Image 1 (cartoon, one colour):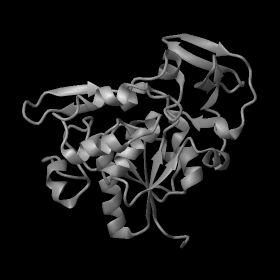
Image 2: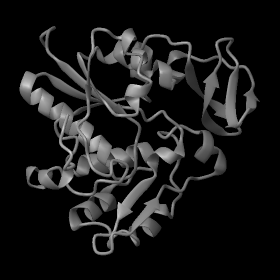
Image 3: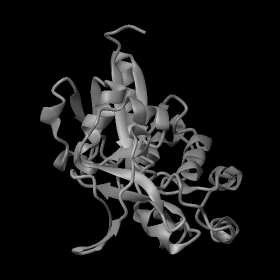
Length: 274
């Protein structure tokens, strides 16, 4: 690999069991940039996040235009609230119950992609569907849950650690003094017992994610979403050229068709691209 080869990256948590439209916009922006300058496209898949709201999936009925919000059901309350998305276990009957609701929202290829997905955790399940729909055909995936990736990453003080709690693995905030805490809401926390934490248990917080990711990917270009630009500390990575993702209508809704050129005109907003 040439040292000067462009590395075009974008990042995202698992964002629904069908990808949200803003993720598709990031992918297409990255691939179009690669068509212009060459190089590789890498998806930094932040599957060590724990927030179950990230995987909420908004589907819209074609005939009526009515929308529905669906999400995974999890094995228990501790997993739902505190376990990372790559560890949360999907409730055994969730897939069958959900599949019965889907035909009025999906075309056959999307329904088949859902049916074929068989992962037991939401991070893997989402990734299987994204891949089945072809959105990641030309994209490398690097996962924040990967223990080898974590061992290579730079140390960051603002971070989380995957540690045991009541028979589960949870994503606890790791304070600079080594304390481990779970956020209950508001100003309330659960203090966890002290524990030895190695780099393979660490994942970054929002404000350190860019630095942590860059220590692994060494990207030259980063496709940023609208929300990301508000908190990315771009001065920490002057070697990266930051590029806004292309605009898209209804960015938080799910995208349920295959990534084909013939569908391109149905994807993008009428407000133009940037």
